[in-house]
Length: 233
Image (cartoon, rainbow, N blue to C red):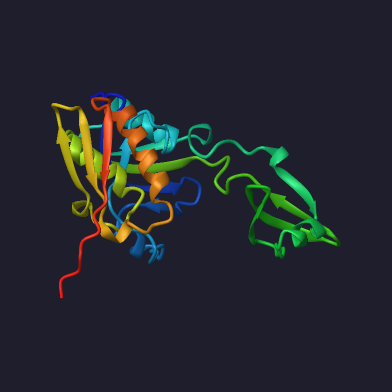
């Protein structure tokens, strides 16, 4: 079964490093708890994948597009070049410790640091020089992925709701009220009151509008409604 580009797909998955079997990521809370990988800050729920958007691992997205079926579980092996990339020796750099301290970074072996917009891991410290590996920690590794398509979204209001929810994970889906007007080719979105003062709201509104135009494509206007209601005594 082929799933066309721009389809909105919800998936559950478990991703592991092939060589060690270590759990890398999962949408399933029980699986995370079983392997002591549970995180209090993570929301465990099916992931939205828009086919062709390239927001997930290439090998996984390609398999969804060419072979996935709703409800059927697949286990696939993904080579490094379609996972987290091959290791690049040019991304292993020696940095003067003074440069790190100047950027308020105190180097320690094994510590993750950010420098010049790049994130790396300190591998060694010798005198005043620090060896930092800026490769992704899983670069060069083959991974395995067990996944299942939970649902393919067909309703446009539901698609818009998920576009918003993936940026505000802690806001329940039903809190986003969406109205579709086919006559005017417009989408109206009522912003939940708990987001009205969010510092990133204006940016999110612009991004979601562009995603509606790009991936749903039927609408010319996205309208945001912000209500400040008088509190009842």
